[in-house]
Image 1 (cartoon, rainbow, N blue to C red):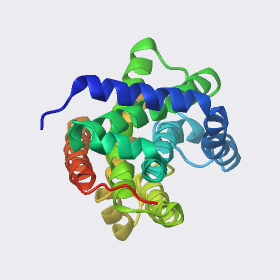
Image 2 (cartoon, rainbow, N blue to C red):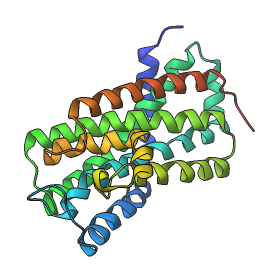
Image 3 (cartoon, one colour):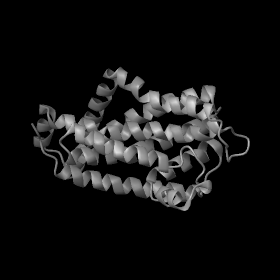
Image 4 (cartoon, rainbow, N blue to C red):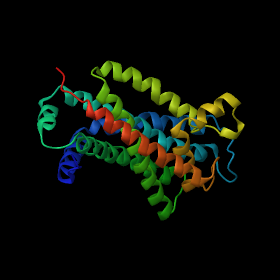
Length: 252
């Protein structure tokens, strides 16, 4: 069955309304990135490999991607919650495809994660790293792309799991290694061979590096390679998410 864009819009609108009703969620998700940015970034005073930028400014693109990572993958919890409510039962019997349901949920999660990233981007632009209008727009666009990639992972996991506790354990096991191996806090060129290998296999690495190209004009890899890797991973996670939603069932 083809994608029903009206149904996608309806699902997207529902997710946006839920997001704005949960104001405490916006505050809670900001705590860790702000601690890394203002405590770790300023307190450690590490070396910045980018001439003309402080260590705090160097890690800012990585922390910006961090908030996208944690907000996006955590979004998979909502599909587990929907499994326990009559809402998912009504959607599953509706004449729409599972791909329509997936894209509606994924776009809703993307909007929420992008808004979180925009809040941090505004804070960072005001207190840490001044950015121009084109840089701001570019960073916001990349944040939306990265969030879609990562929301796909969260939704794919959520579709295959029935326990919120189990999802929380898997999420912690997945997100923290992705963050630390992604080079958000250090220069990959100075890392050991095993750490570099893990970083090369981590899709989050290319998100961070591409964000650094936009905000700092510097990256560990060519910008074209970063973009190609991100787009390839986005297509792969979207396909996996659609397949995962194909077996989605209501639970009690």
